[in-house]
Amino acid sequence: MFCFQCEQTARVDGLSGCASAKGVCGKDETTADLQDLLIYQLKGIGQLSERLRQVAAPDHAADSFTLYALFTTLTNVNFNRAVFTGLIAEAARIRDRLRAAVAAAGGELEALSQAVEFQPAVDLAGLLAQANIASIRAGLDLAGEDVIGLRALLLYGLKGVAAYAHHAEVLGEARDEIYAGLAHALAFLATEPVDIQALLDETLALGRLNFTVMETLDAANTGRFGMPTPSPVRILPVRGKAILVSGHDLGDLWTILEATKDTGINVYTHGEMLPAHGYPGLRAYPHLAGNYGTAWQDQQQEFATFPGPIVMTSNCLIEPQPAYRNRLFTTGPVGWPGIRHIANADYTQVVRAALAMPGFTETLPEKTILVGFARNTVLGVADKVIDAVKKGDIRHFFLIGGCDGAAPGRNYYTDFADQAPKDTMLLTLGCGKYRFNMHEHGEVAGLPRLLDIGQCNDTYSAIQIATALANAFGCGVNDLPLTLVVSWFEQKAAAVLLTLLALGIRNVRLGPSLPAFLTPALLDVLVEKFGIQPITTAGADIQAALTRQAS
Image 1 (cartoon, helix red, strand yellow):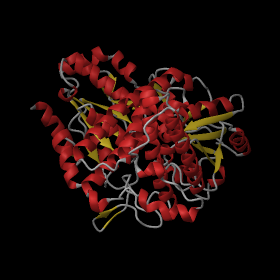
Image 2: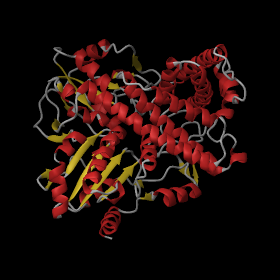
Image 3: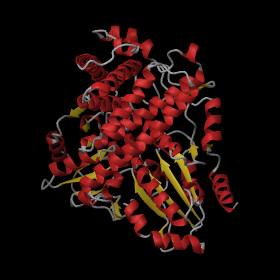
Image 4: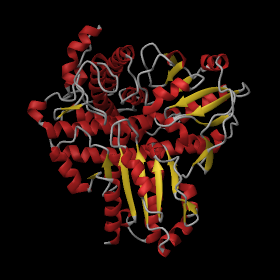
């Protein structure tokens, strides 16, 4: 096992990466090795999918499998080795089907990678014996650390793109250009590339593809549930039976709301599900009672005290504790050994569990936070914002977005929001907002100072806001009084970062620590070409942003 795909990766004695029997995230070495093998197979599938597109209609079932399979390998998604042995077997069958389809259409089957020819062993011991060929660090002696780091950046960004595309796909939004782009990136990685410039070019191309993916997911979410609008969300519970829904998937939340209509069960969101309350089509359900808890890393304490069943729809899952594991359910790409998995959107057993449990015994005093400041809402008051900037009432915009986590250093984001001058406006997205979204930030120019744009994928909305403001001021996005302060944790955040770089957005502050797979030489490239800046202290970084604007 070797894994350094997320921010929580082990860093011991100057070495970075989880290389023991169990990673920091809770993933054991067997599951990690099986995930590596699955990724190896997907590279071969990518090559064959690309060849097939050259001569015949694409195999969209294979494309859909690729999205799902990549999603299962994200940090804190699926820990069930049985799932991965099944996916490995399925990947081999899909590979064979694609190869036959290419041959039948007269396509080229020469000069393919070893990943295409790979034959997985029939048992677990055999699979684990094959795992070395699929390690992220395979070929290190020949390629060097910088090449391995860039391959990792491309692969991990690819995982995040696939996850967003899967979210859109399950809501009925799929585009062949997305499938084709993902297949191309996998096919490129299958060649074991060593050219630094080619790797950088492909990484930026993936960032551009992710912009399309986020646009597609935005269309899926707003097409199904309406454009988000500002809405207060109750953060203290009300009396009654209860179900908690965590993760990211709005479609799963809708299905649960439908399944619990007229049952007397209240549904609460958790973590990245908080922005769901901004969508008219979801908050129309009166039993969507509020949000319970905070970000993913606090789930072991928060799930233990929740008096009902919990459904985890996507990342981020951490090791279930005895206090709640018998009332935890997973669905979609998520899994943990011994935890019940919901298939075919049938939540009957979740409803039964909720009815059998006590629920909340009293209604606590009402306390709310505001969500739902998507692009239409913000741009609807663009004239007011622009006038406030011109008058000097709004001096600067700080977008503080990204993932939360348990590692030390994340209080930086709390300090940043709290210390930002009162004549600045704060925008936020992702679960990092829990570091400060329950604080009182007041108003600026008659508007709330803190605007919650949504989930991490709603970076698309943030980009649209920035682009519209830049057009209104007759300048580029980089010339706006705007600073992006990004907290990264896992592969969705990597995909978003690649999009920002591909769009030419510079001077992004990144923390709390830098990805372990970025070597000093690669970091120098990111600093020189894209102006990436590691965070320092909140006060110093605020002052630097305001000073840069003044100059």
